[in-house]
Length: 622
Image (cartoon, rainbow, N blue to C red; front, side):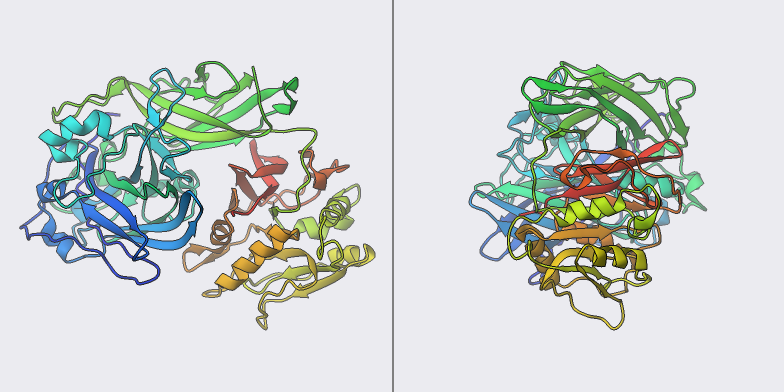
């Protein structure tokens, strides 16, 4: 790739709280027309943001010098809601406040098709009291700092430590500290997390999965488009503020200043130079039982999304390093691809563990570095960022144990209802799986409850599996099937196992706030809850109902659906109370889960060379 040119994408801010819906708008002066510069990506929007506990909303102050330099106030005045923070959930703790936000951006130039934006990032900037494990030791968010808990990646661009000088010379080429009327806060982190924005990318969707299925769109952010992404933010109560930046990419199309006739009129340089998303498939065999009994390998298949890198027969444009406490120093990944597709190539890493201190999620950092590029400004503005241009991602591998603790407080993800249908399949251990689950509750009233409920109240398209009903009855329980119509509100009275059906979710009929809390209370009290993911469509007016439910319950797994049916039995099974004695399970392979954080992959399968999770579990959020 050659590289970066300016994105003409300036975002004006309006913060909207879920309680009042009121917008906070700065005082701005009019301007005539957009000014065009070259070189990038550029910092094209920058705000101080602070939570106001008295008004229960955010106060936002744009960094006015950067805004006036853009000379696009005329366009922004016509669209005062170009950036909106919708507060979904606010949870207060003794020392922390947690926010679930959908942050929406609207491209400020409706009708100006010449200014299509590409690979837009919303960057969360906070303090950095911890250090990146690489030799540079970059400041990153520590446990006592503001944190974005669900980033798509991390960027070094425009951090306050290395780009402040550039910002004083040319605001859109570097960090610009707040001026009069701002909060006067300067974040200290060098690597800052971001969320990726593009047209048709829903708030909770996985960025990499979206790019695979929408690669023809090139990460487009079209003038006038409105896009939302979901942010999970955790901030200490003594520092309820952060800074928010918008980065974007653009190059003139071949007809400029006239609009393009199609996306192919924009050159490859209109997209981001570095990788914008990453996919990791974890097949690790690492285990930890105690401080003297551990071992195995961290086994990963790593796939960066890069718009123009080629990898046949060897990747030469970038190299990949991995960092973790399980080994010393960086692990250099073999850059011979194991799979190739347009815009993404897969590389395999098999790393013997040197030391482990616990089972469960093992945090890891991934560097995707470009030796032919650095952070030099294409328009000659100096900054202090040295070294190779690099994309950063934080992920994890799972370390198993032969002695997992027994816990009742999990939500389980099942990739298809055929796990219920196939309970009478010869040689299957499906009945043992459900028997183990029904034996989990250790406290009343769930120990004595006798109802297994299949709840379809917010979905449509299921049928009652007679095989499952017979099995449940034979086990001494009452099987209750609640169909979609007529609608029946959720009621968990007397229920021991609650199965939440999700296929063909009904338009406009999502779970109420009371029902979501009821599910939380049911699980946290010791009840057993299963979320069914199906291969069929489960989208409602563009909103992924399954992902929304997973987000509202604060579970550490994501879900995906496709149409690749395969009835080969699952035999890759993690030791767990529900899989004790289970050697083979039958079920559909038309859907899958991605597990992270405190989530646990329990049953995995392989299809067309891809390893995926079919059954998993996660504790609910507090």
